Image 1 (cartoon, helix red, strand yellow):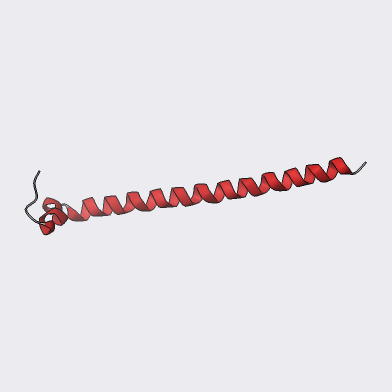
Image 2 (tube, rainbow, N blue to C red):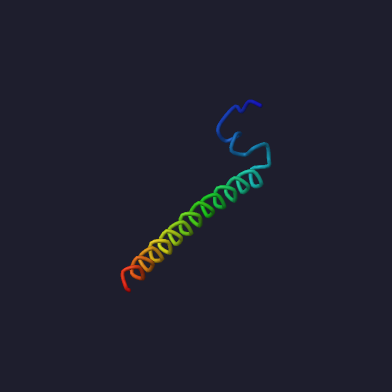
Length: 62
């Protein structure tokens, strides 16, 4: 499919609202999933560090 101009490309043959909203939703979901994964990994790392420090303190005490 060849487009004669940028405006024809952006109109997507009359389906622009569906096409661009689908792209927008997809990008938003992908960004949200990435951010949530980063937050969860940060929390997990903090929990592991805390548990490691707690375990080290318990081993020092008789």
